[in-house]
Image 1 (spheres, rainbow, N blue to C red):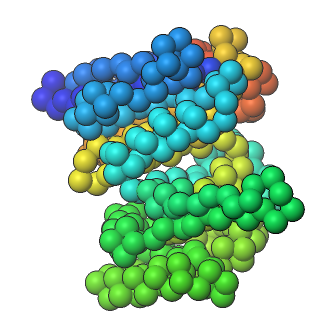
Image 2: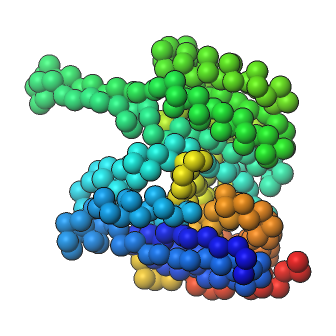
Image 3: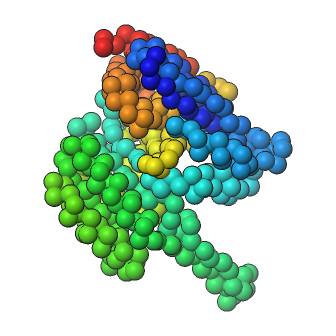
Length: 357
């Protein structure tokens, strides 16, 4: 095997280890068929370790993760840990410390998957949202004044730097060019209300587009964009937006592509490492029951292959996923699939093994 990649694996909590196992199973089939050598290193991070040892994200683990070619995350979240601790001290800390400044979220309706949108099919829902991932309200300061009194004030600031906006917007233009579909990039902001933040985004967008004369550009207020994503999703190719708006519209995107059980995402530093994950969370009530849908985790592996430059393997895995959703899975909901978690992984792996390449 001439090609080799070192992958950090974070199984995480709840159903995370189950779906990660199916992703690794599928990557094993990819390895055999496409001659790619994957070196996996597991990291014990998440709610269980925090409850057991009080450990969240050691600096040593961060340093090691930074050396990985990519990271495969199952899910982090435990009902016995108060909200915010794991999110801030593991997930957001990884984004900030590893400078994973691009959040890449494909919104793709696979064959056989139902969408709640009337008269829309796979040809209509196929776009990408690029969300700035390290700034905005998630990096801003804030606090309370006179907390708990009738005069209480709560402040939450949004921090946007020119450097942060420019690099995200430029990545979006490059992504639009690589996709080579409609070659249409839409900026999503709120220029009529969030004047200063949106003005920075719009100016950067307009300056950078001069370097990409082959890309058609457009603008949508975030509220209008949510409406058009539902009414005419086929109009979109690539959308670029800020951290908060991206957090919201990607969940809308997930439901129109069939739900969080099929949605995968990437957190990317184009000059460093990248982390890929299913978007459905740890779903602890389904843990250990072999009923959770692993397709989002498998989709995360497909994204990872594409990011690593393994275009042929990424295309083959997408073909296998489409075959399974079209011919085997009439439902993607936990407990309602015709197959168990491990059986879905078997189906995808079998499709890869039988590919003619």
